[in-house]
Length: 282
Ligand SMILES: Nc1ccn([C@H]2C[C@H](O)[C@@H](COP(=O)(O)OP(=O)(O)OP(=O)(O)O)O2)c(=O)n1
Image 1 (tube, rainbow, N blue to C red):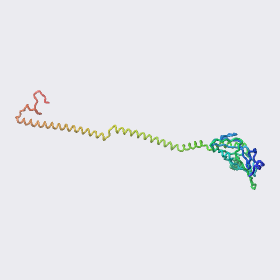
Image 2 (spheres, rainbow, N blue to C red; image 1 turned 45 degrees about the vertical axis):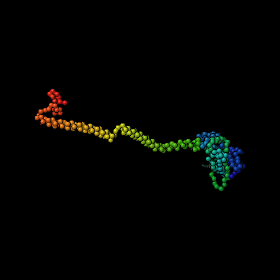
Image 3 (cartoon, protein in one colour; image 1 turned 180 degrees about the vertical axis):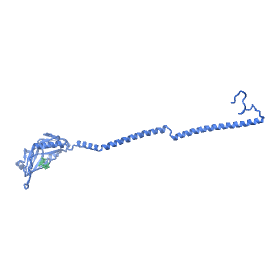
């Protein structure tokens, strides 16, 4: 691992400042901020769950026998700002360095031009193999690619909780819409059927209380017939007595007629007694 004197002497960092040289590393500073919409800025307030991309102020200019390793700044991590693009800087790499940052904390965090954001250590690379030198990375091209990538692939929040929730809810709704509509239709049908049956039941109940059923009607008819039979029996009995009385009167009238030799005793009443002349029989 190279020390700061070697880093400085071999001009591994272009545009560097003394304050960023550490004993065995260099602290890269923020050059440009690429906001979630892709716009360039000198600073950005990262909301909780927010994301931003940072491009270094310095350029690295590595020869083929030096490789770099970009590492997180512990102080930023402690604030909840985590660098995602840590890793190897290939031997021969010439260009700026960039990294996404996400805010895992509960509070907003600001990154601005000049802040340190990555720590780079440098290693000597053994030269016993044929290495292909990477092509230099143009600063403007590097920045433009970062902007395009940011705009195309990232939202204001790295977790995009609102978007994810909305998309998830929409997907679930689409998935279950047919089922839900079917269930609603069935529920409506069942409700309608129950309402109808309730009304029908009420009607039957009212009819049961207001109208006599067949058994009740038969009972009423039987009582009426009983009453009628009783009346007829009574009349029959009266008529029978009357007939018997008439029969008795007739017998006694005949007896008297025979006793008197065919003369009719006008003093006797009875059914066969002749009424006086000009008087109608009752
Ligand atoms: N934070 C970083 C880390 C590295 N690099 C640069 C220097 C590296 O030499 C180069 C390639 O690094 P990786 O291999 O990690 O990235 P890729 O897999 O995208 O690159 P490649 O296309 O070379 O496979 O990217 C960078 O710009 N920013």
